[in-house]
Length: 380
Image 1 (cartoon, rainbow, N blue to C red):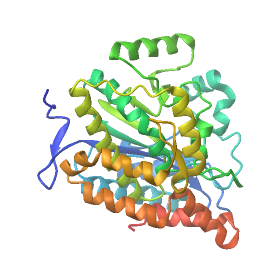
Image 2: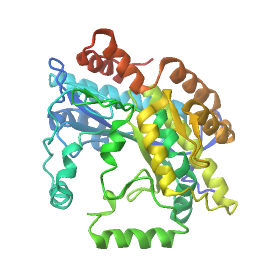
Image 3: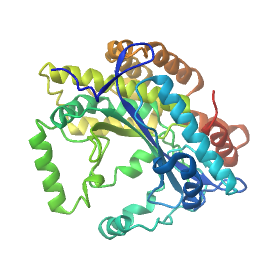
Image 4: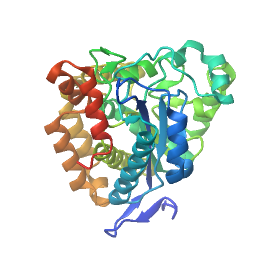
C-alpha cells in the first residue's frame, strides 16, 4: 500500500518524510517572584499578532499553548519552534512576565488553579470536579501524519510499549509548587488520576477502538472526543497519530529531538502494520509499572523493559529505541541529528536533572525558574 501525497513530502535533502507537527504547553511566571502568574490571556493576545490561531489559552490561566505548522524536515521544524517560542517569550516580556517550559510549576500557589473562562471547561469541571486542581501541568505533543484511521489505531499498538521510554527520556517535572517530589516526571502522575489517561488499551481494529470510545462516552468518562487523554491516540481533530506522553521539553533542541524520534517510531510502526503486524500485546499492568519507574527515575535511573518486565538502565532502553527506529531515522535523513541529540542529553542530563542541578547551586528554587527562562528560547 502506498502512502498518500498528503502524508509525505520531500525534505531539503531529497528524502521522503512523513509530516510532523508539535504542540507545546508553557507556564507563565512572574519574573520577580518566579511564581506562576495568571497572565495567559494577555500573553496570548499579544502573541497572536505573530502566530495567529497557532497560539491559545489552556485550561488554567497559568498556561499558554502554541503549535507549529506541519513540517517535513528537521530544519523546518526547528525554525518553526524557535520562532514560536521567541514570539511567546516576547509577548510575555511585553506584559512584564516570563515564560518557561516545565512539566509542573516550580513555585506558586497552584491548588486550585484559576480556570480560564470557556464553556467547554465549565462542562469539564462539572464532570471531573477536583481533578482540575492539579491541572497546571504542561506536556509536549507530537503529531505524525497517518490519515488512515484503521492504520493509526494499529500504529498506536506498536508505539504503546515505548511510551515509558519516551516519558523517561523527556522527564522535566521534579518540582511541584515549592517541593521536590522525589520524582523526575511528576506531571504524568498528576495526569494519571484522570479516567481516560496514560497508556491506551490494545485495540484489534478501528471498530474495537470506536466501540470502546462510545462506551466511555456513554459512561460519562468523556465530555467529548478531546477528553480522550491517552498518551498515544489517533487525533480527534487531525489526520495524525498524536504522541502526548512527554513533559514539555525545556529547550527547542530537545523538542526537535523528541519529534524526530517520535516520527521515526510512528514510521517504523506503520511499516509493520502494512506488513500485517497488529502490534505486541504488552500487559497493561506491566506498562503501569514501567510508567511509574520512568516517572520516578527519569533519564538518569533505571526503567522497566516493557517487553520482559526486567529492570534496565534507562540509557540502555533509549539505545534500544534508537536502534529500533534507526532505519526510519536514516531514511528521513535524521539519524545524525538524533544521535547528536541523544549524546547531548546524556552528557548534559535530562530536564529533571538540570532543574535539580540549578537548585543545588544555592538551594534556591528561584534559580530553577531563572534557568528555565534562559533555556526557553535559547539556541543552544
